Length: 317
Image (cartoon, rainbow, N blue to C red; front, side, top):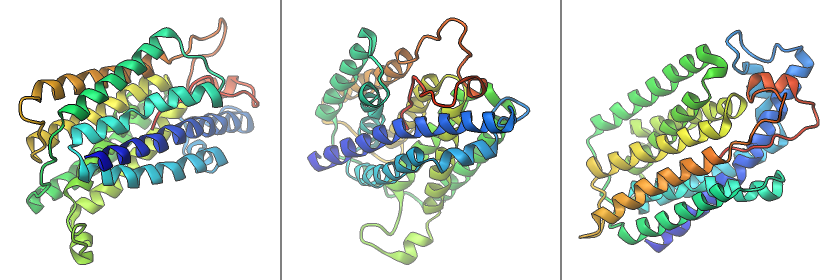
């Protein structure tokens, strides 16, 4: 349990640090694309173009953030196999707290009283969850369920990407929710993956859950990048937290056999609900107030902001 918690916290730290860098790289690329292309860095629906998204991925800030994301993914995968999903996913989603704190130093932001209160609420809720969590379930499921997970991941990412591109600049929160659901599917896939313990390469490569992990992980990262470029980034991140924690947590209890310690079920439920609410509050209260006459956040902001300016907000992965 202790090793799993330490691993989950380390994953959260990697994700939180990477997210600040990714937010800077994404917004910088969007501004440069708009400046160089006279406003053609967005689709006809107002969302970021594929070119803008690709340029975001090759900024040094975004690349370093992505490396940290991969490290966080590996640590998160270990945590998902050592802890109940309602605990591991919630601890990992607390990277919002780390992002908020790092933003003070890296982005020069100031946290208000509501943000500090939300951070304290999240930390308290994590203590409740750690106290109440019991042993994780076995994770053994019929292979048919692994196929369903793959199909669901393809539909979620494929259909979600199409809808987000059609909605354009209005899709920030939806993109955040879909990316969170993708990361949640990734966590479930890691938990049920065959051929890991003991290691069996043919069983690993033949498991549809492996390909569900790849689809959900890559698709979730793409949708997360889009969410960083458009609309209310912190609002989108709040939606990501809900998708990443609530659905996997429920599936872990109902499907994989995760449970709390005897007599501590109410503590686990309370800690889970409070942690998610606190994480959403961290993102929501972290939304900066626009200055008078300033353009709205999103794709239009990219063209109106001067090239040397840093964004006054960052999102957690």
